Image 1 (cartoon, one colour):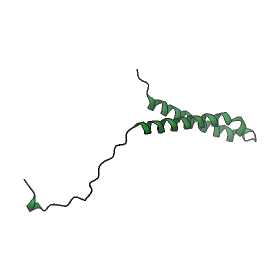
Image 2: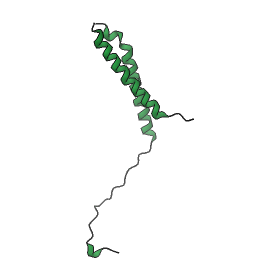
Image 3: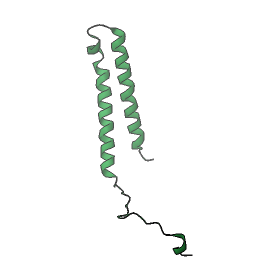
Image 4: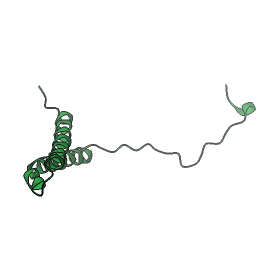
Length: 86
């Protein structure tokens, strides 16, 4: 059984988004001056997951070879019908 890195990135991104939404909701819901301090741990989980997600994505993009489509140097000229072969 092989480990799926795409699944890990999906889980990291999902946990990051969910923890940020929960942290923001709890901060607004508590509505006091210590609300942000009380929910700081949720924002740090979110930040850590998103940063790890971006690191893994960047690492994978460096590893993959970039394939470029070769463009013609001059535009193709249209051949008149009477001069075509076949």
